[in-house]
Each structure stands twice: as C-alpha cells, then as structure tokens.
Image (cartoon, rainbow, N blue to C red; front, side, top):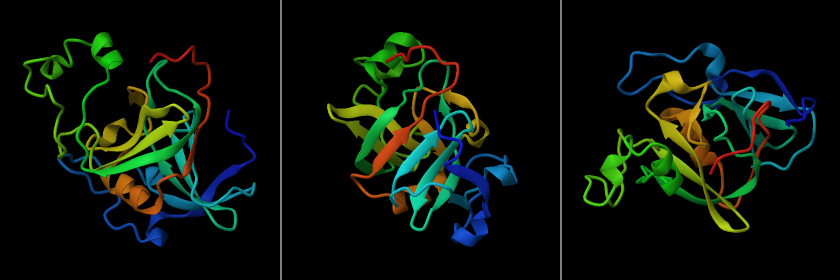
Length: 203
C-alpha cells in the first residue's frame, strides 16, 4: 500500500501548471470539483523525476518532478477485484487510440461487447475518437512479459473520476490525460499500489 509518508495533499492549484481548459468536458455539462483538478504538491521522500505512482485508495495519480515535487491528478480506477497492483513501465503511447476489449472482458460481459465478436461492427476494434473508451490518449503499461493490457487513458465521462468503475485501468478526463501524456516518457516507471480490502485480482 502507498506509503502515507511519501505524499502530502497541499500544493499549487492547476492554474499554476498552465493547464488550460482543465475542467472543461466534452459532451457533458458536468464540471469536475475544484479538488479534482491537477495541482503541484510536495512529496516527502526523494523519488526519481518522471515516474507515475497511482494510489487507488485515494483515486490519485502522481507524476514525480525534480526536487521532491509531483503533479497530482484525480483518476478513476478498476472496480471490485479488477484493479491490478504492481510495477510496470510505459511501453507505448498513443494519441486517439483504437480499442478492443480483452478476451477476459468479453467473457465477463458478452452482451456488452457483442459488437466486437466476429461479424460485429467492431470486429477489428473501435477506431479512435470521442466515443472510444480510451479517450484522447492512452499510456500502455508493460512488464517483463510485455504488454500487461493495463492502460492509463482518457475518458469523456467525468462523473466516473474519483470512483472505482473501470476494467482495471486508470482513467483521467481528456484534458488531464493529454497533459500527463505530454509530460511522461516512454520507458518511465509506473507503480500501481495495492487496493485496500480487495481480493485476488481477476484477469
């Protein structure tokens, strides 16, 4: 579980980050609460700059900066036992990525993903765009075996931020994931901390 001594929650609001339109949402009249906006915070422990650390219990993602600073984003995380903890690295990055559910997702919810079955509208995957579940950007998490099928990605559903709703990935609203995407480098270390009171993770 995340070391509570590492991070503190005070800092500079997103205006200091130059993140224009951070609380503007597409296809929604919902505005994120002020406390959900990105902000720069001080971290107590020294961590290498450029890493991503996700605390699923507080629904926050930290991108570490030099001199014990970090940018804190609010995220949605995996629901029930679909969240996966561990250490990964950024194996790929995509703008307006295409998407196809994993075999495990299709097995869990066949009715929800019938359009992705052979002969379905999205048999070869859904092309990138505003209606795509991965949103404007996707950061692909890899481990020693290759693609883990976990993603840090965008969403046009701002009401899901700060909740456990996804199939195991971490999601940010599109303006925030674009900002994170532009700041993080391929090969960067990503740490997904344990989720409290969660049973074994499903694939």
